Length: 284
Image 1 (cartoon, rainbow, N blue to C red):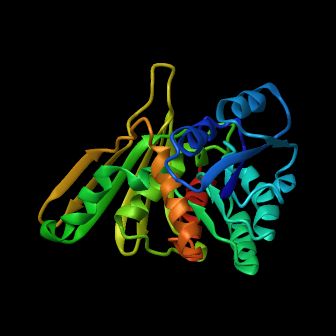
Image 2: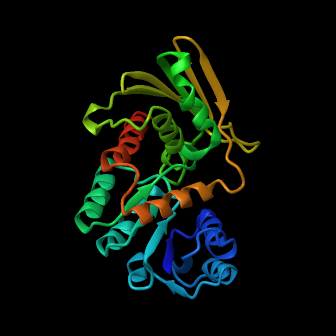
């Protein structure tokens, strides 16, 4: 039995993951067993909901109780200190977007995973929505991709590390459509500007022009995630829809990685979205 523990339990995604594992039993041989963050009311409710037996104060105290971990802090700036002791113990870890909010933190986490031989996975759920396949499967018929645009909600003033809370979805979507090219931090060149509730940014990724629009959510709702790809012989535009169980694909991704003993993306590919979004955030 693979025992799974959770960090960052304030995030609603934790309850989703517990349901998938313990109530729906979507992954036989895997079970949610432990929470960090102390014995507050919220963790007590989660433990009762999923039948979890262990609650600890600090992420490091999960070691010995679990075989895999999912880190879900809303503030990605907390991911490095939460993840490093788990990786050091050789525990495979899923970091529920973003991997980190600085290149320095991301590199440190990736280096720790390599040193200990543990599997480190991170992914936006938008990588797995059905519309992404439409952008990639028929691309050859549309000719060379000239311009990719991804739009959606993100608040540069969010208490959860600004643009990183939702904006990482935009960047990972673009990278998934482009085939996950590597962009090294020193090679990132972006132009970004803020206009009221909008942030617009442009860059070049693997020789293709890529632009992003981040729209601050309002009390009345938020902009949908959307992608437009302009090719030499055609174009494709789609809203990107997250279904009610959108986190299930991310968990599937993690379980597959554990089974294979390696992350689907290389360390350089995992670092790339952090490098790009950091460069954008620095300008706004």
